[in-house]
Length: 377
DNA sequence: CCTGACTCC
DNA sequence: CATGGGAGTCAGG
Image (cartoon, rainbow, N blue to C red; front, side, top):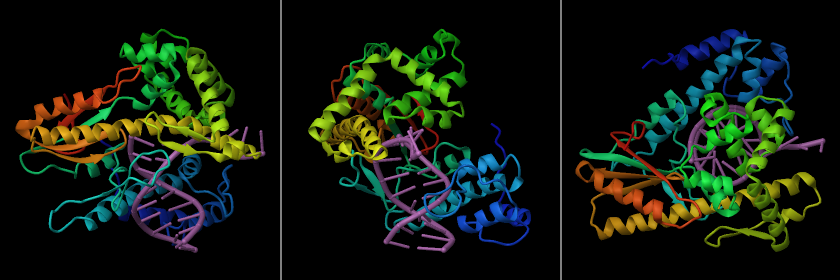
């Protein structure tokens, strides 16, 4: 396996100061903006902030990276400092001297949708997307003689959407265990599923997730780096393929406006008074909330129910394993090596059968010697 | 204490 | 005209 070398922090900040031509606090967005936009006279791209100066966020820096080396180095600097301050240094501080472990708090009354949240430390946002990030994740290891087992719901929110909407194409896709992103890609790009390229599938994945959040053509265009018009075509084609989804979303917002609230499948209620706002942006924000909450909230209902049942089974069968973490669609369990098959079977079966929807629930399970290296079984 | 930046699902 | 849902932590100010 090969991996691009990532520079040392001490070399990066030296280089950034050199490129800036004067010392400044690299962590200060305000000072950075001064360097970029006043001293170096780089173009102040579209993005300005609501109140204060000019944005220096990742989108802006990526754009500026084309015309100057500093922004590129800064992105690398930010990646590394975030990993070090939040995860390496932060987690080290949180190790309990008695247990040698970090112990999070799971909060049950924080989110508006019914999800759990995790704090002190937050173990629901441990890096996973980048190679460097996975080196952090690999620091989470089981007790000697144990494996870490991860069981995650496959596309649970899209399955909940299929259930709620009853959309025939979406329901059938999940009943037949099809690759939903590939299927959407085939439709959006008008090609046979077997001719879908990785690039097309990636775009379709963005569309599928965007739908759940109530994304606009503008937002999709920005996300995919395409034109507004093409983004609108993608969305139109999506709704042509899944007309039941379009109908469901319309009806959900209408009903929410009449009732003043939306509910999840198990009856959790969220009031959304802004649906009646006469300020369009406020109202549209409320409409996206009305669409997303039953989906995200029902997924939360499902995994919570599964956690109760998994715990009950662990106790009833006296399996010497521990449910350690929940990360919204995933459970992480520590289990002795000789129990791993038994636990895998029990957890998968429990999670998949905890609720009976119009589509099957699918759970992928993997285990290994750390949280980054989990072989799927 | 808030803001803007980053991390996750 | 604004423009994707839900969170937590960090540093700076």
